[in-house]
Length: 346
Ligand code: UFG
Image 1 (cartoon, rainbow, N blue to C red):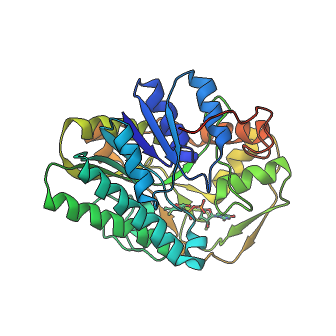
Image 2 (cartoon, rainbow, N blue to C red):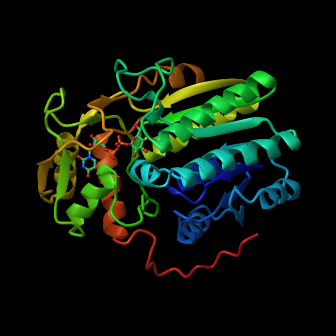
């Protein structure tokens, strides 16, 4: 059985869906602070498969240990964590505690049960500033905020763990900018409150929830002056987890992989594509740069292709099509859905 921590979240639900499609048996654990039971309901309906669900926080070590006692877990896909850069600046202790102590608890219990296969969700934010683009996994690592630092610290902890015992098999996945939604329109990004990230903000402007987008700076040294990022379709990202998992189940080692498309798009290019796809005008104004943003960040994803046989297949157009379908079908995310919450926790 595969344990997916944070399995009800945006990346977690898409990864769980892929894992179930691939025939893996699943145990999902989530504390539901930033996710919804409705996504789990939909997962059951769409896959028609059984899986186990625990409403457990990784900080609750004894509850977590119980999950390992009750299930024959062979590997862990660890996605649980707090993920907002801005929030992490305001609440550093919560970020360090949740992300780092949660991971320490998990690894300690895995060690106790002799389970040494782990896929960990990291972020391109660990590349910090001043790297040459496209960025490779060997680039200099640094970061500017507690969220990024928590990821970087965990990467170091996992490195030390592997050095101490070479039987561990760890894949660190450095995500670029996950966007879009499942092509069924059933699963997507459902941020609490005002979205921090570009794509959900643009979708909410298109549907009329927000009046206009603020573009953070148009004086970067990029082709149109706005920030350039490597947006990756959430379904491609989920598939990257499956490839990483099958790789770590077959071998030991510790490797970091960039999960990106290798292509960068500017904010204005994203707006234009979204307008094309939705047929809506996205009003925007240019404002000052956002603190901590860099001009451009895009991946060299060749290591994931060479070693895992994975590459992103969907382009910006499909990302916008799927984000828009999700937004139209679910204007309030997973809230106010008609299906009643019917999952019973394990
Ligand atoms: N942007 C705007 N207006 C907005 C939101 C974003 O102009 O309202 C711009 C940003 O300045 C940036 C681009 O859109 O140029 C993308 O911004 P996002 O906030 O969507 O994404 P970031 O690249 O800033 O951050 C994302 C994740 C982080 C992760 C990082 C890794 O949100 O968690 O990628 O590179 F750490």
